[in-house]
Length: 468
Image (tube, rainbow, N blue to C red; front, side):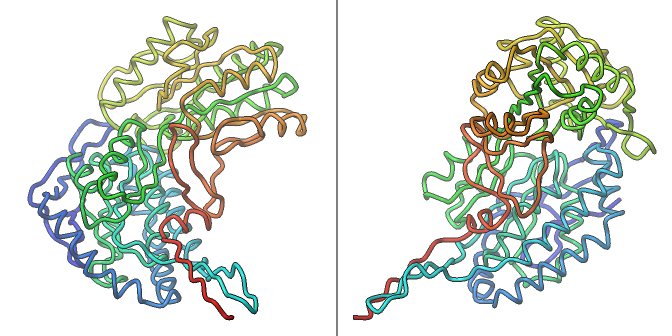
């Protein structure tokens, strides 16, 4: 595997140091990875700054063509990218290949958009229009749970808008992103896209760098606060997609046998390492026992193993720190509730945790109130929808949530009062490139995806002209 290189000013270069990337399924070294120094970050930013005027002046049709070319190359290399991603991140191969294909689809979507001037008034007295101008150099910081698709939330929108980019993947999952950099390096002018890797030591330098005009960050709420503080000195534009503790509200008129698999998938995709995974489920008392039983059956039947093995549904946790954190949440569930599936420590190599279901637990437990970001799901008994909504909204997080009911009118009414950026009805975690996505409360600032997400990489520029 490899060798892997950084992409700075159109050239593939070694890092000033190297670091090891581990396979979380084996805890063995997967590959050496170039590690950028602060000086190399500065070189990447300088290259992006120098490339910005010409790229911003490039007709948008030409920028669209570049995005389509990138999409084509990613799509043609889905199998290779998927294998790299599985081995560095842990997810099953089919999921990893799906993520790579999704990244290509997101580039294609943004290539279909435009940034037309909006005419506010066109009268004999005056003409007022709003145009959209690029910001400059964008710093894009991507986490380890979905390295490729979350890169594609940011990079194509930034490039289409006329910005240049310095992209930094997570320290534990840099390889698939560096591979994409290698594949696309000749599809853009030098300096337009730069890709570096670090050992969790350059994020702060990006957020406070004087020549970076916007930071787009996906990650934890605590790190998001640091990004916001670092950007404050220069009043950088920021987009923060942060942690979530998504609640599912299951009303008493649903069929547990039919609904449980959908809830299970929403909670345990990517071993629960999803910002919008369902992380706590409020179930009506009339179907509580049946729902617990159905979810426990699914958990016991799940196939957990190394992602390259055929038939595996869930891989390991991505890194040791997250593995140990989730074990702590399982112990909180054991203390505050009753574990009815999973919860047994893994023996041997790899950061594996079987899907764990906890019942007879309530608000106030760490497992319910905090974001576990792993394969353990608490089920809380409720009396009615109002009871559940009050509990669901009583959280500092507000990324997503869902209502489950056969009464669509009742579900919709509850959804209008759920204090989250997105609410789904009878589904969960359904994202599409054309649908805006962002968090409420401490789950984020700003919007990604859709036309609204594209606008976040621009500066509104009003031209107000008198005619009489």
